Amino acid sequence: MTKKKKSKTRLKFGDIIEIAFDGKYAYAQYIQNEKIKNPGGVFLRIFSEIYTTRPDIAHILISDDLFQIFVHVLYEFEYSEEERLKIIANATVPEKYNQPSQLFKTYNDWPEIAGFTRAGREWFIKYLDGTVFPEDGESLKRFGSILPEEYHYLPTSQEIYYDELVEMIYAQASNAYDVHPKQREQQQEELPVPEPLVELSEPERLPSPRPNPIAKPLEKLLTRLDGIMEQYEELQDTDVREQLYEAVHNAFVLAKTDYVLSDGFGMFTKTGNKRVHSALATFLKKANDLAAKANLTSDQSRLAAFQDDEVTSENGSTYDDYFGDC
Image (cartoon, rainbow, N blue to C red):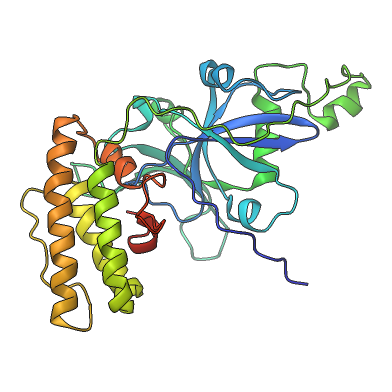
């Protein structure tokens, strides 16, 4: 029997994710910026403690990191009926996790095949954002069976699933009294009875440190696009959405000063293309001016401002209705 797909969950940079297992809770933060490309999973920082009751968000954020890892979450969010992963808050991501380029370690386990020179584990380090090593212009550097010690600290780009994630948390969590069930059976020790769980009525969103500086021009853009959509339904076709995405990504998120806005966006008529061009050009000029005044200098800060789902058109449309993920 095919599992029924639930409504789509869209992770935002900085989301705090609750990981439920064995009547306990661990927490992670989504730290994958738009430059990291790894379709196998999403990049999370795992916080260092296991809890028997849900803690305050502030307590989670001051705890140390346990590790960073790519985790497959699509099934958990969209198909699993157990809600083992749940978004409960959003918080600022530390600057060290929002760097222009980041190295990852990974490996391949090669089988022993006659006539094949590679066998066993081969370690390498690589960039996932297109950055290359200056000495050879490659994005990957191989090391053979032994990874040099200076790279041991790097996060791995290998992807894991929920069960593997729980095993790793049990093995490395700072509060040792929460041992793995297998260890508990071996030691024949009883842990304290968990305290009653405190239910959260609604996912808590931490207040933004400052208002979105481009909220007004973004609202006007979405309202104008709603108006265009009433006459030109192709505005939400995949081809048009992709071209709108490219325009905003280059002209606003990356703030490329040499980027020239196209006259055509895949609309069926010149009039349709002209109206879309006018709406985008007006928005981009105003939004870039306001972003500069608000000191939104990083790609991620501009992306977060544009992908603000609290900003809607007069009819309730959000950025996702016309642009998708930028």
